[in-house]
Structure formats: structure tokens, C-alpha cells
Length: 211
Image (cartoon, rainbow, N blue to C red; front, side, top):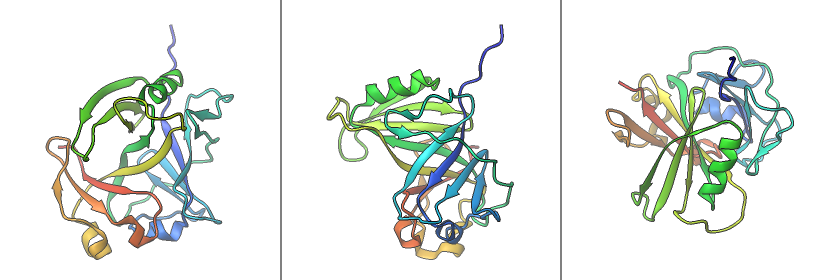
């Protein structure tokens, strides 16, 4: 029997001017959008710097409008493929924060995004649960406290991009790029991006490509 493929993330709408992301080393198409791997980033012409506003998936029921409070939008045409000066080749993962991990995980699973892995960590200063879901090319990482701490909806937090050359952004962006450090993922390195210096409202992590 035919099986429906799981939903793949194909678009994010970001409440930033496209010029800020261009300054961060992303190539912007004529329509003001930007294709990174298989995901189109769309920017607001009336941007107020309020982060990621919506996401769009392939293979998702049209009558679904949110996933645990995270707004869904109908995707436009994909942006044209481009080479980014910062060498970004894909979105490695999208971080979603929530006060109730189990509730958010159940909402993602109901939308067809199965839990793949989870880990518990205190490496960020307090106990935290991370749950990972595959959405096509992108990992959706749900982060929250070990026990539910409120009934607020989930919210978009940040993005991690895979770069072909993790050293490429340094001459472009100067001290807006952090030092190279080992990533949690074995064999990979990371650099933080001081996103607010560049006018980005989305926290950004830059990662080396998997070996």
C-alpha cells in the first residue's frame, strides 16, 4: 500500500528585513526570499524584528493551522537556488521552546513528525529535555523543562545552519561571529553568531558539515 511521506519543512517566515540576513552572508533572491537547502526563508517588508512567525510543510492537512500554537502558513513558490557567501548549505535544526515538552511532542506527532530521539542535559545551566523530530532535511528540536511548567503555547526560538566552510563567515562578519568550538554532534564544530549585532531577531548557530 502507498504510504504518505512524513511532512518536510519547506518554508519559514521571519519577521526581519531581508537586508539584515544579506548582511549575515545569505544571498537574497529578487523576490526577497532566500533558499537554504530545501527550505525557503521569507522576510517581512514591514518587519518588526519578532523572530520566526510561521512555518510551512509539505504533506500536511490544509485544515491544520497551528501545531501547539506554532502558526502554519501555506508555502509560496520556492526561492531560486543560490550560493551563499557564508557557504550555508542547509538548515541543520530548528529549535522550538515549550513549557510542556510532552504536550508539544504529542502535537508534532499528531502532525506526522515522529519523535526520533531525546536526551536530558544540564549543560545550559538548568535541567532540560531535548526531543528531536525529523522534518525532511531539517531536525525540529523541542526544548523545555523535564516537567511541565505552564500552559503557554510553544514558540520558535532559533536556527542552526550547516556551512560548507565554517571559517568563511569570519572575514565577512568580523566579531559578529564567535570562536570555533566543538559541537555536541560528534565530529562537528560550531560558531555562535551575535545575531543582534547584525539586526537579526532569530538566534543563529553556525555548524560545520557532517563528516
